[in-house]
Length: 226
Image 1 (tube, rainbow, N blue to C red):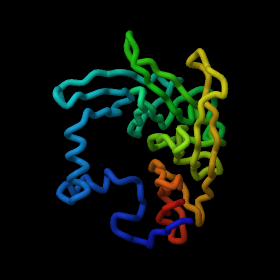
Image 2 (tube, one colour; image 1 turned 135 degrees about the horizontal axis):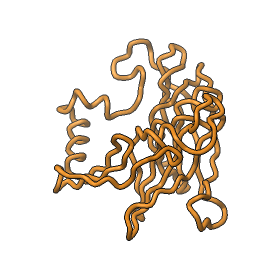
Image 3 (cartoon, rainbow, N blue to C red; image 1 turned 30 degrees about the vertical axis):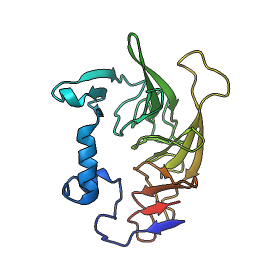
Image 4 (cartoon, one colour; image 1 turned 180 degrees about the horizontal axis):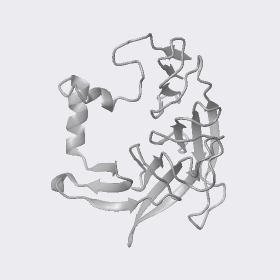
């Protein structure tokens, strides 16, 4: 089921996520709570191709915990997801290994994991996109009800983006070079079903998946998908 936005619908057309909507509305109830929560917790930020951690008690300082170099990813636009063990998961818009089949670029983007260790944070590239399976993830990944990762790519697949699922290898991997198994759950066409999903997906308590697309739909202003 898709919900199509009419032309010019305020705050709905070109839907790309909730936080940008709040930037000019800090006094509204939802936004006030959102910014209050951000101030209270420790922030993990993505800036200039590096992962940085900012403690709230020392907001004037930060530590770089990883710098991307291309093969492990490049241009991280999205936020992070943290698991119960304290490991961080995220995406990069470009970078990765191998050619990008759809666009001819080297690196269609990655999904990565950062693990804290005695000598610092260790980065593992969980998956490098190839274009036909997705390209240029713009949003973070989340954990689904089955404990695996779900996300979107803004383009790739049929050219209009994908919804994907990532699962760990079926056997225990002893190196950081073992990619996770990726399944493209849906390939957008850019027509009635929408196209270019920039935002993350979410699940309700019944396990239903929801998301948005930047384009497509009956009026070409984006959709809400289920």
